[in-house]
Image (cartoon, rainbow, N blue to C red; front, side, top):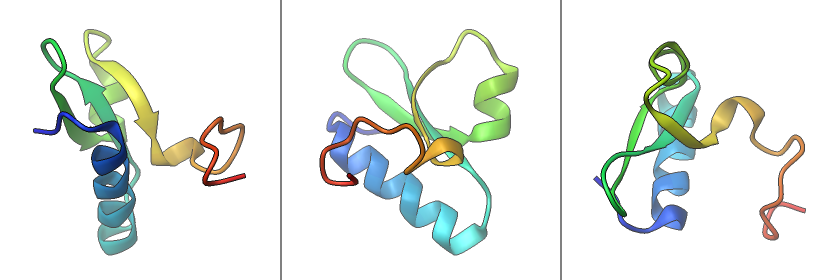
Length: 66
């Protein structure tokens, strides 16, 4: 579980690099975030996707990526 979006994004990017699957940062309750596989996050519509490595660096608004 994460409370910092930057740390969660870094974790998702690390997992993608290690395992070659796409990962998503999803919002759980309140301020908590969790990393799920992108497939699971897209399948369960109740999960609010905040970031996905599937579209990382494409159409992004993250200033450090530009």
